[in-house]
Length: 272
Image (cartoon, rainbow, N blue to C red; front, side, top):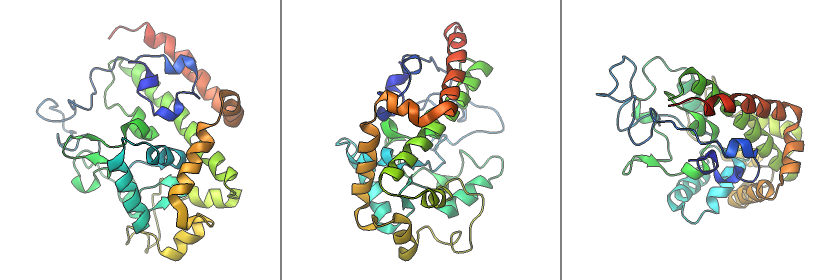
C-alpha cells in the first residue's frame, strides 16, 4: 500500500509525489500481530500483547485535531477530545499535548517500562478492538515507529529520516496556523515548551490538568471556542497548495526531503 494511504490524510496534497507513491512492505512489525509480544518474542525486552507499543501519549498538532473534529467517522476520538478540552487536560493551541506529569514520567522511564505500563496506555487506544481511534489523523511518532523493519538497517534509517521530515513539517504547519490566528512568536515559543518535557514544576508534576487562569492566558482569547480554533487551524493547512507549503518549510525542510529521495531507490531495490 502506498504511503499516501498510510500517512495522515492532511498530507496527501502537500508531500512530494515520490514519498506518497512509495509502498513499503513492512511484514515484521504489524499492529494486528505484535512481533514484540510474547510468546513470539523471546527477548528480554517485550511488550504486553494487549498494550503493544501503545503505552505512549502522542502529540497531535492543532490542524490534525481540527481534521479529526471535522471527520464524521471519528466520533469516539471527538468524544475524547471534547473531554480533554472540558477538563483542561493540556488541550493547547499547538494541539493535544500529553500532561506534563505524564511527559516527565515517560521521558525518565527505565528499561522495560515501555510496552508494559498499562497506566501509560494511549488515550486514543481502542481497548475493545485493540486498535487506534485516530489512525488516519495520527501524529509523527505513531506514523513512523517500527520496532522492526523488513528492510533491516536500511528500513530503520528510512523511518528515522521520514520521522525527522514529518516532525519538521508538523512543526512548520502548526506554527503557521498559530501565526495566522494572531499568536506572537513569543506565545508560540511558550506553547512549544509544553511539548516533550523532561521536568516540570511541582504543580505540573502533581496535576493532570491546567489551572483555568493559565489555560485562558495560553489560549490568547480562544479559550471559549477551542473547537472552532482547531477547525480554523485545519482549514489553514487544508487550503495550502504545494508551492506555499514548500515556501513554508524552506531550505531545511527541502533538505530533509532530499534525504528521503536518496534512500527511496535503495529501498525499492531491496527484496523483503
